[in-house]
Image (cartoon, rainbow, N blue to C red; front, side):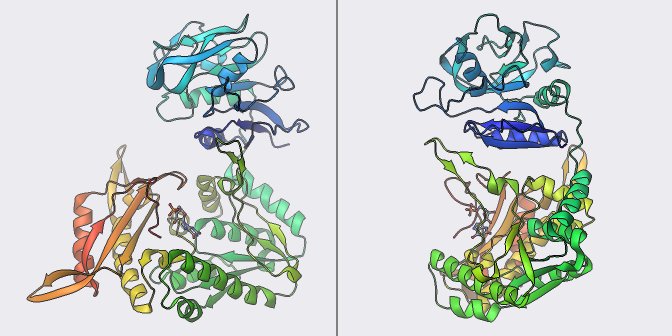
Length: 517
Ligand code: XMP
C-alpha cells in the first residue's frame, strides 16, 4: 500500500511548500482542507497541520476536532497548527508583543528529542506569526526557544504530537528539511518509495487496468504537462491514444513544426491541425483582451471537437491536469476555492470519461517523470506558455504581420536566454532554466521615433518580460544581466523590421500580472 502523509490546510501561504518538501523525501502526501481528514484511510502514516492567516481565538478561525487522530498517528503542527493544538488543550495563546517575523535562532531546552535529530546549537529558523504560545498545556514539554519566543517547539505529553512556531518548510529555516525528514522518515516511518520510477511503473499499470482496450483522446498544447501526460499514456496503451495538437497561428516561431517533430520522434500518434486562418480571421479587428480570449476559447473548442468527433470509438478524454490545479486551497473568507481544469464544452453525445494521470504531481515532479520517460530536455524544461498564445502579448488587434514581428523578436530573446550561462554554486547552468517564464510583448498601438543610418523611423516598441516564480500566483521580475539585455535589444532592433525600441518590464505580480493582457 502506498503510504501517505496528510497535510491539513488551515489556509497558510506555505501549505503547498510543505507538500513539496514531503515529496522531495520520496514520500507521497495529500493536501486536504483542515476539516477533511480521511478517517478510514489506512495508508496515512502521519499528519501535518499548516499555518493560517487567523488567530486561534478569532471567532471565524478554522477549528476541527483532532481527538480521533491524536495519539493514534504522529502529528506535527506548524505555527497556527502548533498554537491550535496547544490552545485546544488548555494552553494559552496571545498576541505577540512585537510581530515575530524573520530569522531567529533556536536554544534547546530538551536535548535529544527525535524531531531535532542532527540539529546544531543556535540553528537558524524563520518565524512569521502575530501570536505566540504563552503557556503550554499541563505536562507538555518545551523543546526549544528563541530570544523572543519561549515555546518555539514543544512535544505533547505521552503522545507523538509536536508543535513548532517557526516554518521548517521555508528556505530560511536552515535545518528545516532535516526536521521534516526526522518527522516523516524517523517518526512516521516513511519507506521513501515514492519516486518518479515507481510512479511511472505503477501509473502505467493502473492506466492499463483502467483503460483496457479503450481509445483515448488528448489535447496537446506543446507544454510540459500535456506532453508528459501523452508520453505516459502512450507507454501504457500505445496507439490507442490519439493526440490532437491545434495550431491557432499564435504560437512561438516555428513552434508548431518543431513540437510536432518532437512528438513524432517520441512515437506519439498525433493529429496536427493548422487552424490559423480560422482563428486569425475571427480575431480580425478585435482589440479587447477578454473578447480575444473568448474568441480563441470558442474557436479552440470548435476545432478540437471537430477532430475529436472523427474518432468515433473514443471512450476517454485525457488531460494534463496537475496537483496545484486541483488543490482546494482556503482563502481567508473561509470559502473553499476549486480551480479544476475545465473540460470546456466537449460534445455531450461523445460521452467521454476523464483520465488525469498527473493529477497528484507538482510541476517539478512532472518534469522528473518526463525525464524518467526519456523525453528530450528541451521539451521538459520549456517555460509555461498561455493557451491564447501571442494573442495576449500583442496589445491591440492581431494581424499575421504583427504575429510575425513578435515571433521574430521573441525568438531572438528566448534563444539568448537559452544560450546565456550563469554560475550557480560553482556549476554552470542556463539562465533560461533559472527563470519561470519569459516572453516578448508587442505594443502595436504605440509608435515612437528612432533613427537608423540616416533614416528616421517611426515604429513599434517591444517589451521583454522575465519572471521568477514557483507557481505563477506571485512572481518577481528577473534581474537579467545588463550585457544580455543590451545584446538582445541591439539584435531585435537591427534584425526585426517593424521594431525600433526595446523596453524591459520591471513589474512584479502582484500588483501586475505575468501576461500583459
Ligand atoms: P497571469 O498573467 O495571470 O498568468 O499572471 C499566470 C500564469 O498563467 C498563464 N496564463 C494562461 N494560461 N490560458 C493559459 O493556459 C490563459 O488564458 C492564460 N493566461 C495566463 C501565464 O502565462 C502565467 O504562466
